Figure (cartoon, helix red, strand yellow):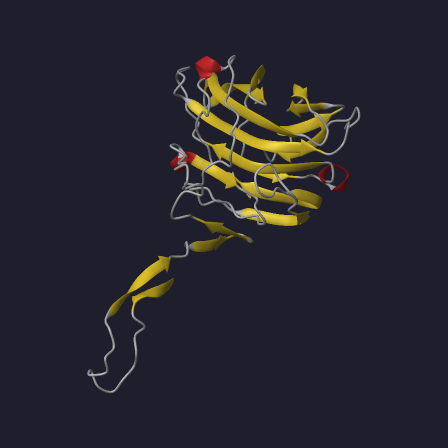
Length: 269
């Protein structure tokens, strides 16, 4: 903690009759608590990171991963997950503040388990959503799929690049403009319960707020966010402001509509 004295400067004396005026101490700042998880510290801010706007995430208690990436790798989610830093990385200018450039290796965060809801196709039987900013620094990834952000250990669920397109598990999200920040949002919904815990999910994507439709009906759910897969890939893009939530960020009924792209950093409270 830190603070300052209000009123006359206090004095130290052997007697009370020194002419010293009374005053009081004012608390100026309380530092937020942090603790380590894996190799990367985790932080739970005591207030919103944007107090001037009062920005608060109403789904903060369901956030599995929240990376501001402003000069550090701290996860600011409300979920105790582990992280593994196996990369050489830098923090150049991001979309908001700083972003992350992985120049070799990878950084991996566990997102923990997601609820596997069965028996209904209701909108409320949500699975998950992921959103982030990405800037591709190459004009094309060539004809071979490059996995930029891996989402599961089976290595088949990912955000990728091929030619001049961003892709989700092999399906085209949309074209990217080199050296331009693009916002990506993907939400998943349970659509078919086959019994025995087997549930297909539809995955809808938005690029820069524009709906790109269903990316495919798959069994997968994320169990991690791994940024970078190797030196040939990791030097080709930057990321910023990543958030994974165990709930929709856009209603299923609005899957063909527009999405309001954030105009400031996402809240961490």
